[in-house]
Length: 187
Ligand code: IMP
Ligand code: MG
Image (tube, rainbow, N blue to C red; front, side, top):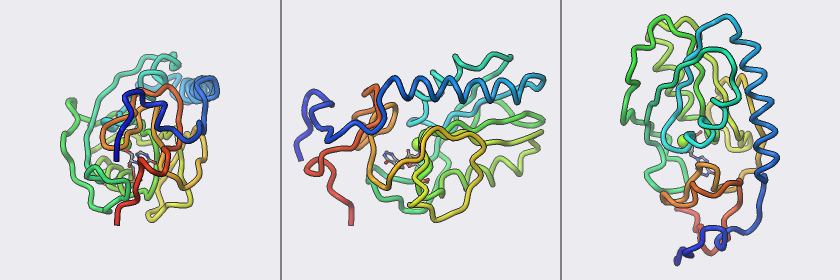
C-alpha cells in the first residue's frame, strides 16, 4: 500500500463536502445553544478523531461552556473494531456535578460510546448527552444514545474532517471514501 503525498489523491469520492459540514455544524450548535441556554455545559471531545468537529462546534455554541478531552483506544490502527475499549487518557477536570456533552466524530459499532457513557455515568454527573457528526447505523453492535446527530453515513470506511486511516487523512476538510487499493479490509 502506497499513500500519496497529497491525501486527496487517495480519495475515491467525497461523501460530505465542506459547505454541507459547515451548515450542519451551525444547526447542531444552535440546537445545543438552545438546550443549554441556562446550564453550564462541558463538551468532552474523544481524542483524536473529534478534535476538528469540536473546534467548529465550539464556535457555534453561544452560552458559556468548557471543554475537556478523553482518549480511548478500540481500533489499534485497523479499520475493523475489536470491541475492546481501553481508557488511554482520562479527563483533566472532575466531571462531578457537570452537564457533560460527549463530542464524537463517528459512531460505528457503538463500543466506544457505550464504554464512555457507562464510565461517565458512574462519576456523579448532573447530566450526560451525546453529539456525533456521523452515524454509521448499519454497523451498530451496541445500542447507544445519540442526542445530536450530523449525518447518517453508509457502512464504508471514511476519512477526513478528523477521521483517519492509520493516522493519516485527518486534515482533509471534507468526509470522503478511501480508494479500495489504499484501504484493505482487516481480517
Ligand atoms: P465504534 O467504537 O466502533 O463506534 O467506533 C468509534 C471510533 O472508531 C470512532 O471514534 C472513530 O475514531 C473510529 N471509526 C469508526 N468508523 C470509522 C471510519 O469509517 N473511519 C475512521 N474512523 C472510524
Ligand atoms: Mg474517534
